[in-house]
Image (cartoon, rainbow, N blue to C red; front, top):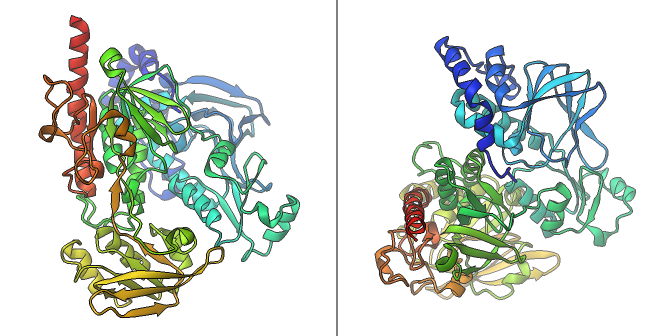
Length: 589
């Protein structure tokens, strides 16, 4: 989590830094720009760059051979080497380490996790006596905001370093059967968190069985997770893995946030970035990972500014990092259970109660909880979820479908994007839609793409009616029916992808009497009457003062990524107005 207050970072260097920076800028002091990927990942800072960074940190020393950080240690922040050398190693849980780099004078050690104070992920050892400037996470964020060009270079390095850690494949070691749903869930979660890990598939890797023997693991222990600190988790859940990695989010129960955002999809992340960049104290929670349903999109090609398209996960990842840059606190995974409005009239607060018993206190709350995947009424569906039935199409599922026949159900843009993505891996994609065509529910560019893809077969007015297989071994066949002719067809298919829409995630709002439409979406603006008769809700405000709704969860929203981002940004102006009104009311009370 980030530090409580970033202000001291600015205050500490304000007086002595302003004049120095002005002199440097007047002399047009250059910032070193990388010429290749290696230089971008490990840039060498000039004396002018070091002078700009120094006021944001404090000097520390280590003797040769001393450990600077270990995996799981509290985040030290950015370490800028002035003298000596620091060796960076990336370990896994089974005693293997990979050399990342050595930092000498003018180099710095940090990765993207240091923006939010995530625990250390590498071993750092002083090869020689080291003197360095340590810039703690809050001050690193302050530096990157105050020094745009220098901050851009640092940010590029941090992003590339995280990508390098992921590509290198160290971190926690996952051991199990590659097709085990529990193992797939762990992989998917770590991938969505952009957290590096290594995998030993005992069905493929010759050395996996020997590694299992070292830990005296039985089949009932799988999947096994070996943490970088050496601890062993046997068939763990996500919470246990997060605890092992030091990533369990915490809440300061005494703190009242300016804005609490429920949901880290495009709408929620947009609201977080704009609110935090304008000086508000912001916390975001999500039950799963950044990105929401958009995060499962293989490629979004109609989002403004990305002519070649961008994956939903990449877009969400950039927004997630951007929010951390401005000091947004992230509580992931965490799930809202209920909303308590009782304190609004007394303290001007809304309270969000979480499923784990904790409570968030905030002056305003943004409902960006989106929607949950809709499950069609097909017998045995729940039995095969995670064992051949999927509600997303990531690289993990695509790998399992290599050169096989699959079924994809749905006719919206997410379904179209998934079909095109899977067609690059599967031998054939059977695309089932209930309607007569895709024209009413899908963007034209995707329809044209599907028509031009030879291994996608569109089956209109068709639905899945039966799933076949062993609930433990997984799905092995599917029966679908043409609704117009009544004919049925059996196919040996081991993977079915369901993109049949979603229902609003609003059950947690029931306790507060939030106004919903007939379909359960949150009503806002002129469509609601506030519980306080003299209060006129803003366009994105609900019938509860200070409670806003944006994105897919809001009644009347366009259900598009661009629209969700626009609403998230627009809500911030309304939040400022509400907070200003609260201050005026307090001042006159």
